[in-house]
Length: 364
Image (cartoon, rainbow, N blue to C red):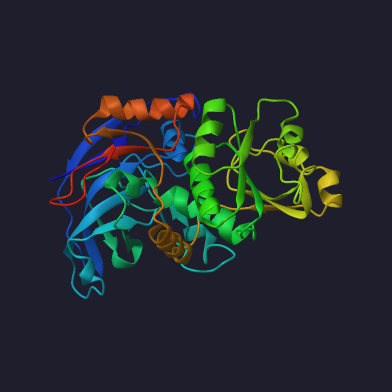
């Protein structure tokens, strides 16, 4: 049997309810033509999972497994499978469906969705076994532990598109601001940008997270709690390039109002989330300075492969904040959700589901 972690429906209004976790059992699925059966070893949480438990995310399912991030081993290949060479090999699962390769966005916007606890697609990584089409996996980089592998897919894909595809500034010597360091996407963008030779600066609400980012290669950082943080950041920029080329932002709020002053003319704000507010100020000064504001969310199947290949080439280790062992360990899994609620995490929060047989164990 395969254990499956879902949310249990209880009465309550969106934003006031908090759905409890529940564990059920299902028969182990069989792969069909072109499909692979993957035994999952680790799965990671994202903010969307916390929103799902509060009914603040559209299309919630109370039957489909939670979580979008997963690392596992292919244990069976269905007939007519082209990737049979992945049998008994570790893989990363794609965290969304319905977007193949178009650079502008999903080929059919209404068929695109993130997996995990959603009605649009039955897939979710909070389970022991999952059947997926062979096109929905990538060979896991060999240097990653299961927990690190599970930490990568969603934040890696989101960060890759927001930074590499959308900002147009993934180039050596460019000055990049990454807001809200400590979150999974922000940390992944930091790692990508440092590996590409960019000068990376960060914002955070706590000094210790800024110091951790510096140890990872950031040139500097400021607290967004300071009223004039933009002026403080300006003092840290290099004299021969005293401006930002791009900002990779997941908060929204007053980022345009603050940042246009230190962005170069034609600078880019690539926004992949709006955790501060569902609305942003767009000021005339940004218009006059030719600032580009670009929305970005998730990415295509092609971008996912590009991102995984880059992680493999540069031997990047995704940052894991904390892990708990056991899919049935509901108390400690609830603790991971509390970390998200309280903003304690620096990196991803991971459930270790099973150990690979004779393979690499978690280093964490």
